[in-house]
Image 1: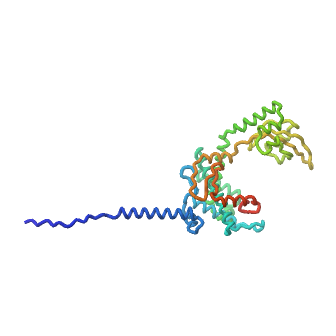
Image 2: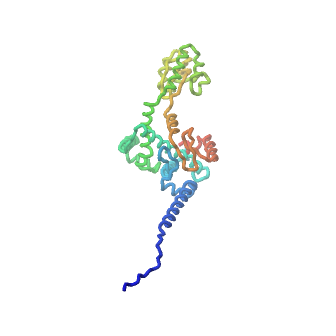
Image 3: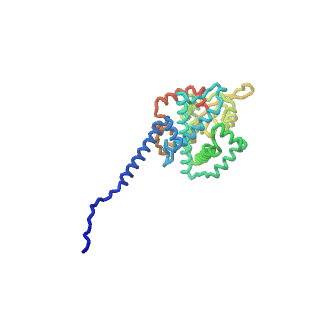
Length: 353
């Protein structure tokens, strides 16, 4: 006779892993939120400074995913402090102390300046890449060798970098040589490709007006740029050596009260008029008037290019000033402090050096 089948009570096993996993995820999220809060809102605390200096939390994004990070900023800020602390400003009658309340605010201004420099370096590299410019590690190493030969022996350069900035040669390559190479290549691209038609057209219109016998001062007021426009282009008295090299020959050869042909300089286009000359201490001086139209400089062009890049500020201490293409403080107190500081900059080594 077959044995009766024994029915055991059924207690299905319900695994708890989903709940555990969810709890773990929530815990990690809370840790991340707390960490970000400490970094971005408690950056002046010891823990905030520690985390910011050890991990690359983004401060500001530019372009697609390119960021200035807290880690990079901390490294540069350490080098900056090392520089100030390695100098004997007492000989100049100056003092640097970042431990006082004013000193901390001064350091904050230099920190903001560092962020802007780092942001500009990244923008330059992005703009260079857009133009097909790429610089290899071997090229950077070769340029570093050239720079070191200019400054002295390898040992001397290494000693100076370590003493003044706390840097190694690798730091020097990354912080100075590489950005400078990208900027030089981008400048060459700017010189080759940027259209200066607006400045050319304005100076040509001024030249045409002069040929039509319009008074030089009136043409200057109409077409010239710069501070002397309101004075009819009157620059005052100059020695030849005080002029830009491109202007010396045309001024020296000019006939009195006769406008020169258009002269091009790195700044722009010039039409010059020598009103009179005199000898002062065996040196000839020239009373010069000028019509000047300004080229779009590399600095102005770079600002325009940076305005066109997407920028997102993560830190709540700063905001993006698109008109000036730079990071500025949100704090009105810090803005006012900086304004007052710069009005007396000649006595503050943190603004001079």
